[in-house]
Image (cartoon, rainbow, N blue to C red; front, side, top):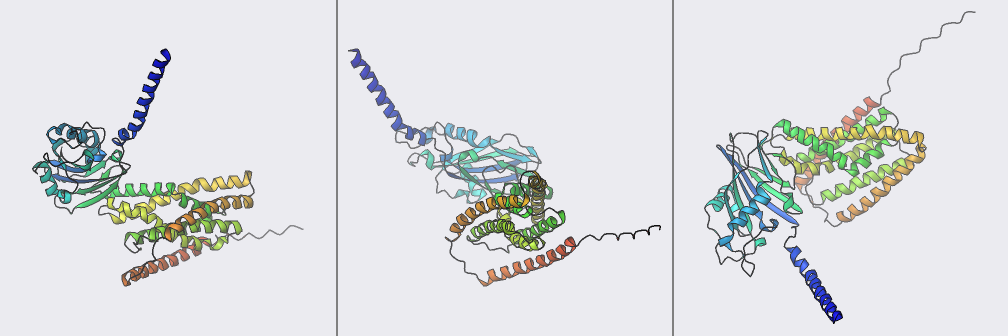
Length: 451
């Protein structure tokens, strides 16, 4: 009898476990983090108030108690509390607004509502605000699920003046795996500024001053060179054979001049903008590392190495420009300051790397391994990595159609070629001056010896 009861209990537990296992995916799907979320927003200071409008896909607002009917459709008559909870838990406490460096107080909710995915009211500020505050509300009969709607919210912040220096930190990365915030800033008397912010990029100055731009872009350049493994390996290949500061200075200067030329030229629209261009540059960067590594192995001609470095520096400059092109939206009207600052940051990053790399290499070759053997071993490891990069990136590149150049494209390339030739001539003059040996004082004649 006891055996029968025990078997019955065991069967019940196994059945409950099976139900739980099959129900788990359904439970988890309700809390699934979206892969990609796009948030639309407007920031408009006017008088003593700043209005922030946000449109957020409701699928990204999770763990909210939502009133629904048995079929899962939204119950609009009992939805207000859920919308307020979603606004508070996911938006209001994470979007930070600043006026003249001071964070603004918590805003009040001026309006909140649910919109259909196809609603076009966020095409302009006035239409979006009118839709949130006075537009018709969705009624029963418009059957949608929670994850199909869009949450539109209007916040109001008290401010001192609509001419202040405003900044925003849209820390909404928790809404999805990849979050894009398309933000429009409307300041009275000024042209509309549009920002496309990815994830949590920190504080964004909506109308930045030149010193704010300089700091931002210098920091971007510094950390970009430190985080760029391919650029670091290229620098390593450059410095491995050098033991004298004069020769190394010429090579580093050539790299600096070259990447500065193409970086600035790209910012002024002289570089191709086809989809094929980025994979081409990434492939050429890998090839540049591979070439420098092989040159170290077979024995580099150091007196002419600045020429090779200058050519590859042009390629690396285009690589830097891909990051800069995205960041230029934060420069405001200070394009020149942003370019100068980014270059300064890159150069400081390079010097930071060289200050550690050169002494470390010297110590390694003195106490650990012979210089020639060490050069071959290090360069071989770098070449192995670069070869894999070149093949992987090359396979992506061949998937693009070869571009067809128009007369406008050819004229841009001609202008770019003229700039490169001019920079090369300047670098040649610098190499003559920097490579010139320092004159030494003539030795004094020996005094005649006394007989």
